[in-house]
Image 1 (spheres, rainbow, N blue to C red):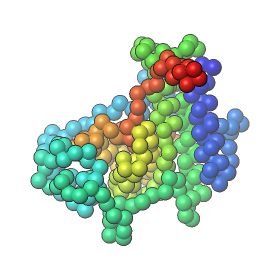
Image 2: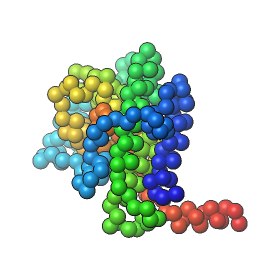
Image 3: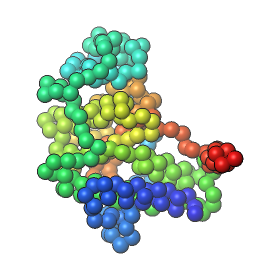
Image 4: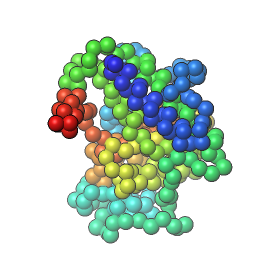
Length: 285
């Protein structure tokens, strides 16, 4: 089986298990052949396809001021920020607006700005939100299958084969997603989006371990006057760098049927097929 077949088989297995776990939804294009796929996928299928990884944040001109303003504006979030910072000697320590030496840990109560979210939607809107997740996963599948890859055995050291490499990178980022959140609206001042992103980041860092991810879907984003990429840079990606987490949490914003924010904690390197084979051989010796 070639690279595309292997990855799609893994995606199909994950999608089937996901849907069976969530109220036995009707098959989607991730694992059913007869379902109509979303039309007009963006970013794939040509030589200038857009990636959903390797984003570089647009750094503010005055980083010290931007950092001070951010931590001053979000003072109620300081316990969560301090709880995920890997050490006290991080760029944010240069700001007088936050104390990273406080005791690690947060409390979930009615006074806290953060929330404890389930892995998948629940409550009265569950069925509708699960449909939104299925639409986005179908759109991911459509985008993946549109990437032209070679029929030859893939070599992770061959960086010239950009299509094969992108197919593998996009596919493995989809496979690590374990949490799915749907936001019907971003709230006043984008409050709901900010709260969901940072609540999910804390969950991934404190509970998720390596190679775990969360997909946050903005169901009604198209009706809002908001630059999602700028919001993510200013409120998620840059603050993570200031907290010393920029290399540990990958953040991406993109459109796949709906606008999304993807968070991945400690994404590992592309696995070596040779190392895998050696490990399997050693196991059965």
